Length: 620
Image 1 (cartoon, helix red, strand yellow):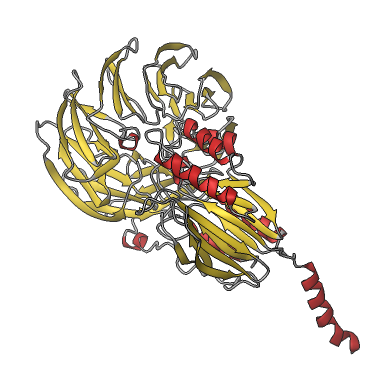
Image 2 (cartoon, rainbow, N blue to C red):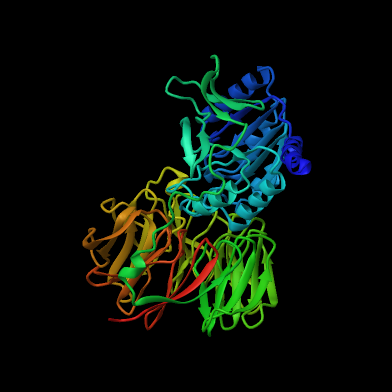
């Protein structure tokens, strides 16, 4: 009986003794720095903040929570590193969406300059976990890779005797991160998370709750309305975390405190909301035939040839699946992520990788046939015509390669930005955009430049770099992130017309007869324009109920039906001539890439959840 009474006391003492002791410490937070090659203001603001942090007594380390640069380019990332190295204490960095959405290196430069994309460290008895929450090289909601979520959960579980602080750029909320619910459900279970720290909003948001767990977003380091840079300061002890905002040249101002003693949420709880799939009940004639899991996020459309489906993923795997039932046939591992995706021609699969190589594999067994080395990552999609592969890279070069032999036929070295798009290959020319505000037109036979179009674009972010150009009857058509649709003379490169009417962005398609252009707008609508006119002429606009939409996914047509996909997992079909919505289907909550209609109502697609899916839409 004595043992029964004593055991609870002993267990309590053991629990208390195993809990990590928190020693008081202080750290600063710099976020949303946005160093820009076109101006010195952000750099000056950062250096002023660094100078004041160095002069502030008792700062033990600094967290740098993303958007280090404006354009994600290697040169400015190194410049940020040079500035941060002036800090007289350690600093820890996580990625922001400006490092992941725009990156000529495919985010490989970030890892080379700053280290891993996710990691953990200890300080003063507290566990800090840092990981990426941004979209990768596509305009989309943020996304946390499933393997990163599992890593974080396991790390928290292994260190559950320590209070933990999670450091990200995006807040883990609906509308910011598409799979927020998976992340919050996983990270709450060990019960040791005390606070999420982030940025992104350029404003102080101290009262956020990520499915019950407390979060704070700090102001940008950029000068505020009074012209003053600023950052955050946190004081930690065994009782609480006290947060402050610090403007350069002023006293810090208290924001709020967060408890350190115990979780102020229920570790056994769950997300407040989950994605709604009820739309599928409205269209029961659309069903999933099979779904396969690639293992990592997929950022490009699938490719189909002779009963095989080919996809590339974020971990550098290119895999083949059997079209009939989704069974995996083979798996080839490149040296780094595959963004542009593979293209097949007569039993040969060609793709580029962020490891600086262009590969060709046997479609039958995945064996390497040849590879061509580039000087920088290869992020572009491949177009193959008549046995020649056309692909752009980040080394200012566009290449034409003999698919059978792997011999480079010609190169064009005049690019001022990196290439991500799929080129448009016409009988006598090749057309593509790059992240330099430019659409290029090259001679298909030898690669010499025929013309280039810039359209007066002034910001790199407005480049026609994600859109797949289309052409009909002597015109080339594009859309761009300045929210315009443009018709360009195929022979001269001169603008025929340009309209901002529909607020399009990076998604475009054309009817099989070439008479209609399809585009996805940034708010709910799919629109259709005429091609054979000298002024913009909208034929129809359909409110498809897709909400705020910015994913770069093209709109192919087959058998008179145009298909589209969205940044939150929808695939939809409309009647090409009239715009009548035929059906919508939700098969996830993340970016769905350009779909591949196969005919007879079958539609193949991939998404950033790593899924490869074959749908069947039956006629009524």
